[in-house]
Image (cartoon, rainbow, N blue to C red; front, side, top):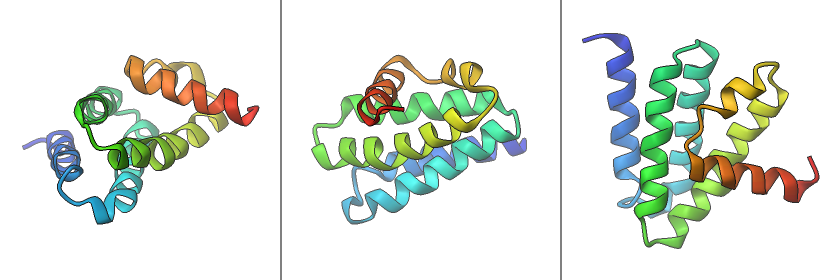
Length: 113
């Protein structure tokens, strides 16, 4: 298997576990953010886009507010901090699927950034 496939499978497994392990939601979102940021830094943009899509799928399909809140407060916050400090900000923002992009913009505007 290619390293990219292994990474993508690892992230998919973590995303799939989000609904099951609510006590570790924030830690899992932090780990997911680390993985996606690593992919972005290494310019593995197709893999990063795929992971972001999986995370958006969980975000939009779950009926559990705790999961949505964890994704917004941990995952998107960490991702946004990196993106807005990066010179490649516009390109990185284009990787985000629409729902996550809109939520990130909402957070940024609310914080006055």
